[in-house]
Image (cartoon, rainbow, N blue to C red; front, side):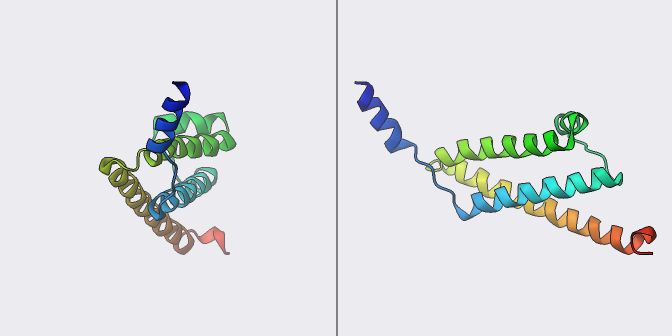
Length: 120
C-alpha cells in the first residue's frame, strides 16, 4: 500500500526546470546582487520589510534568504507544472524579475553617469 502511494506521488510530481524557471532563478540572483550593491553603496534602501530585516542581520543572510525564498516557491511550482496556473506563475515571475533587472541596469547607468566621485 505505501509503495503504491509512493509510486502514485512520483508519477504525478516530477521535477523539471523550464527555460522560464532557469530565467527566474538567474534574474532573482541578479536582482539580489544589484540590490546588495546598491544597499552597500548607500544609494538605495530595501523596501520589502522581510528582506530589510534579513539585510539588517547581515548581507550574507539577505542573499541567502532571498535565494531560498524564491527557490522554494519555484520548486513548488515546478513540482506542479502540469497545472496551467503554475506554468503561468513561473513565466510571470520571470517577466517581473526581468523588469526589475532592467530597472537595476538603468539605475546603475544613472549612477555611473551622474556620480562624479566614481571615476574622478
